[in-house]
Image 1 (tube, rainbow, N blue to C red):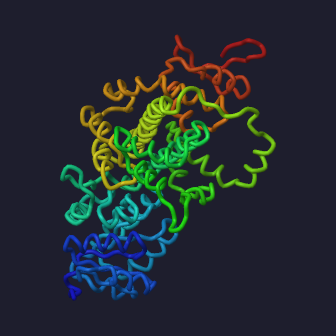
Image 2 (cartoon, rainbow, N blue to C red; image 1 turned 60 degrees about the vertical axis):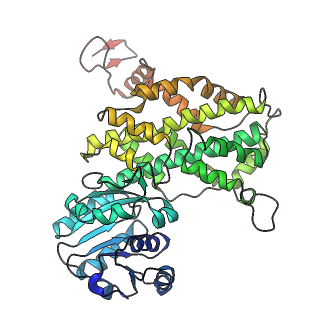
Image 3 (cartoon, helix red, strand yellow; image 1 turned 90 degrees about the vertical axis):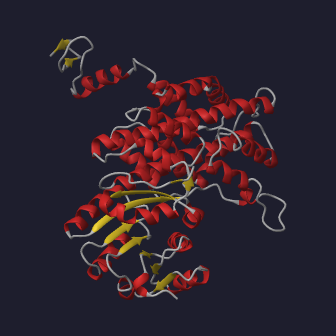
Length: 476
């Protein structure tokens, strides 16, 4: 049994994530403590710990008094009001100079507020995004801390030990000032939404378009995950297409209702991007289609009124068509990551976070939900040019993306002809075509705005701000 004075780190909230993080730390020979009002969670910690280096509490006062010297306490509780409630209960029990970490999925604006408030009160505060789910927390997550850099340097030895490692390098690094850590995690989750939507659309194309059986779809995802599309999300998708409940002959997947839930981080990404006027359409549509999935009864009613008037029939042989689909998936994957990284680039200017996009790509290569082989290319692009505004401008990515253009056009066109919704594939293509358009039709929008609202416009060859009385043909 460890003594209280040996304790070096504490976590409030012993649910799946909190408990597994503590067990991860104990595995690396750190003496740690956990607190939860629910005594069953405390008991579970003791039952699962094989090291004897954890200590559990169901009394918060006893928990805070169990440390010697400067305390480091992480909150792993649901985002929102609960975080503020826990802080209100915790702060009177701490000393100035103690370190507080919010390791949940807090909105970055809440983190910014808490960072300033706790700094004024004499506490060190870190907002840290944690990705990797239950397995990551236990075996090595990717962590995105931001806020108090001095405090990060104090706790970095622990975080580096428990993080996932890629090429012997830990997938944790200081993201930047203020709420930078939670902002980066929010964008991470936005990319996650986009990738999950892309995979689900691919599933529908394989099933309804190419009319493949479940075992054939499993093989497609398995093969893709062994090449340049390799990613954690494709890995778990492959597993899902092989999972049958005990005694059942069909996939569990086929018994799951097609209504997707969400916790809000994707929505936050879209809302923030709109505030910053950064287009991220593939993430926006991923959020929108999760929402659409919830209207099950409405979708059933509508499907009866608007059935397909012809049989879904795809051209050519399925195996030949799969190469087009793989290329289209690659194209859309590049678009999803590029839009997320562009949002980080612009947010860095607005919020002055001092983000390092190369470093972000580096720590996303392992431990997190969006880890993928392609992140090596992103890391290489920013390593080569730290000031790169958009990934589409990188020559290496340009070469591979260009090769995939015919395929994405084929996939989107055939899906439209056959009445299969592919909003993420379509959004990635439209975004690309819009971004490479050096003369958009937005001049007409400006003319319309000036016509009905006198919102003014700028001219191509003449400096200044102009307004036209469109009914009398007079310019001002």
